[in-house]
Length: 311
Image 1 (cartoon, rainbow, N blue to C red):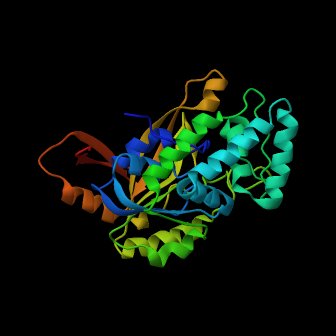
Image 2 (tube, rainbow, N blue to C red):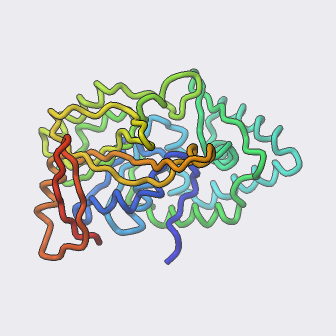
């Protein structure tokens, strides 16, 4: 089986832990909705493993959504544009990157964005206070080779074309379009990384507004998974959500921290997932006599055993 494709390199994407998240899906869902889609790594994985019939990708970063739209609907065009930029940089890599970055901040052209994502330092996107892309180029590499990029783009297009809706709205505007047949996966900007002069994300997130978004989802029995905080070694990132939401907290091992490894440490990163009561109820309903794996879900400080058949 070919590896799962991902043409958009994005530090912090859920590509490496996608299978662990997919294990919490209640069988195949009608529509997987990502209000904070980013590079759409989870939807690509869900399509690859047949976990959802349709997809709705949304992100406030509209240039990124335009790029995803082109990857899905015009794969050969965006691949060709990327190839031209990649070839044009040869012999003047640093100056050409700076020129493309300046032009992207003026025009928001999707091919410019794809080139910048492929060439920036450690695929770590940064935006300044004006919302402009301001990450530096990685001087050790030229970005993914055009032929490899074309293959990745085509594979994603084959997976998502004809069954994906893409929008660039505020996540709160999606509330009325979500039904109890859908599964919502939310990966909002982590607390502390969406403010300041060098933000990792295009927009910021107000935790109070997020809670106001989750409460009606609960009242309407909507299934959702929320990636919200985590820890590395003994250091915890972000505050836990209020217990009044009745969410089931589940920690997954995301692997050794890149930053820790660079500093000679061995700290492991754990990401927290919050599951809605409706999702947990649906999972339990769909469990049969086969018990392939036991997953521990933490509700507050009280562990619960939830046995899931992993497909």
